[in-house]
Image (cartoon, rainbow, N blue to C red; front, side, top):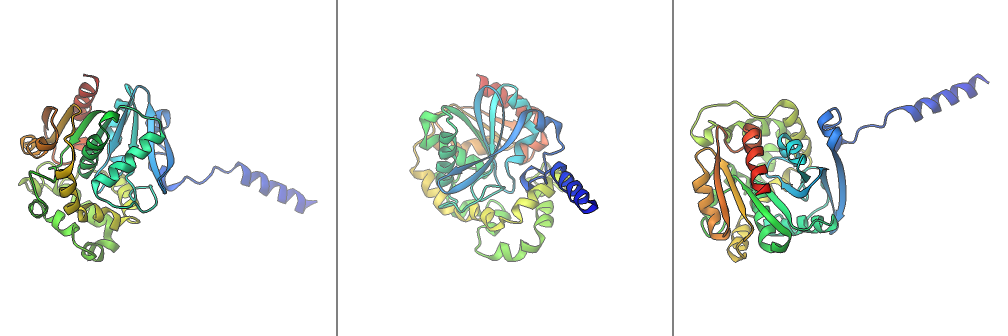
Length: 317
């Protein structure tokens, strides 16, 4: 009888125990703002499983991250955007918590995967916003699928193509040339992913060395770095493939149809004119090119209030 009671007690305890949080949800499990509005979802797209976060109501806005980030790079501005729009922040194929191997990491191919996802979700005439290498994906989306692109947000990336060839592009920063090498960055970084990311983020931040400053202050908190390290620890090579596709990206941009959707360019302080200059040959409807005050490359983290206000203004105009 005692054994029966003990077995029954163990069964009840096991059934009532909270389920273990999945890795993709750990960073948001204790965030009331996330729990109130957003949810994690997965979609099977052309043989891949794409992870995305969605929430809010209103016209759709698709957010595309760059390197070395995931959907979580948009989190500082997502709650405000979701008050007026249905937000979809995705992990690019092969990165974050998306799984499977895409046919390529060139931005034209990645844009087709993103469009396959938005089509599966039934999105039509969505606004597409990208940052860093995700901005090149956003451009390709707008170029290839103009009828499904309401507006284009292009954040802080010189567009490889007519204005900058691949060789010149690799000379813009040590990390572009380094990440473009085969096997070398993996050999150096593989066992120290978190340390590498922690050291990298401040370099392209406001007043960091990439902007001629000496600041080593990072705009990322430890828990943010932990989240990015968690995902890039398992997809390190895939992240570098974004850079190794640069030659193909240049060819694709040169061959692309100009994006005609109304376009907002945002860039680090002092960089808007240069960024817009590289984009202009392939974006025929740039309505505004803005510098984000007191922000380096990490626009969303370094000045979320400004980015949110300008994005909302642009999306509703």
